[in-house]
Every structure is written in structure tokens, then in C-alpha cells.
Length: 193
Image 1 (cartoon, rainbow, N blue to C red):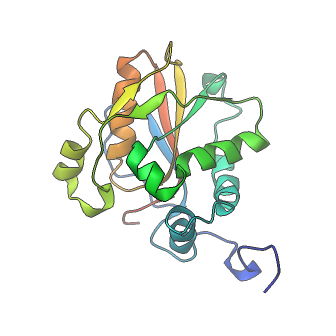
Image 2: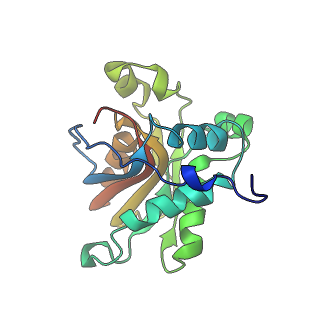
């Protein structure tokens, strides 16, 4: 009940993310700010991603930023790379939620670099509606690097991670293109505690 506020004071706190129990081959780590299947996280994602309330991206980015390994030498010169949408889904949605999050993070951390050379060349089904093996098959050959030289340290940005297959598939391509370290940074993680 306050003009200009997206969340009331009692709902400004997000539950911690569940632990990552997924084995990853190409991703070096995944950091998530909060638990997806909890209020208000699930509603924030729903209104941001599917109802076009882009301003919520700033709230999400504020939750994600403390997870950035800013002080670690191993992440100096890391590049933020948003998970791309296929052009048809981007057209339908009107924006790429991962790009909005990456740009919101950059507003507070202007020294970080940003690159959108990772492209989705294959139109895929929504991962949330698929089982594990179907998710893997769905993302086969979905991504391509269209830039010049691939950065050696990359932080992949997305809104939600469940099985990790989207981030893992992107990390595979990035490592094939020369990246040495690839981590995922997301707002919310699905899964069990």
C-alpha cells in the first residue's frame, strides 16, 4: 500500500535457496539467491517473466548481487553473459528476462563486462514442463557463440534454475569455445531443501 513499491515490508525477505544437489559437468558452480517454490519469490518471477513487470528485475538483481564473487581474484575480469531466448520467444514475451537481470546488476557494478554473443539457435520447448532426459534432449545444439573470442571467465545470468540443464548446455558451448571458468548466477532455485 505504498506507491512506487513492488513489495510490502513484510514480503521483502526471500527464503534462502535450497542446496544444489545436481551434478554438473561443464558448470563450475551455480549460485541462487532464493527458493523458487516459496512466496514471494514465485510471484516475483511470475510477474517479472510472464506479465512483463520488468522493474521487478531490479529487486531480483539486488538479491543476486551479494552472491557475486567480486572479491575473489579468480573472478577478476569475468564477463556477465545472459542466457539467450530464441527470437520467437523474445518476440512473444517482449524482452529477455536474463538480459534485464544482467543489466540491473551492471547498474550497480559498472566495472563488470557484459556480452550477448551467446545465441539460442534452436527453438526449444519450455524446460519447466519436461522431465530430466527430455530436458537434455531439448537443449541439444540449442546454443552457439557468435562473438569473436570467448571470454575465459563467464558468469551466466538467468532468472530460475531447476535441473540446471539450460545453464549446463550453455556452459558446454562456452567451454568448447575457450572459456576456462563458467558459473551460473540466478535469482531462484527450484528443487527440494
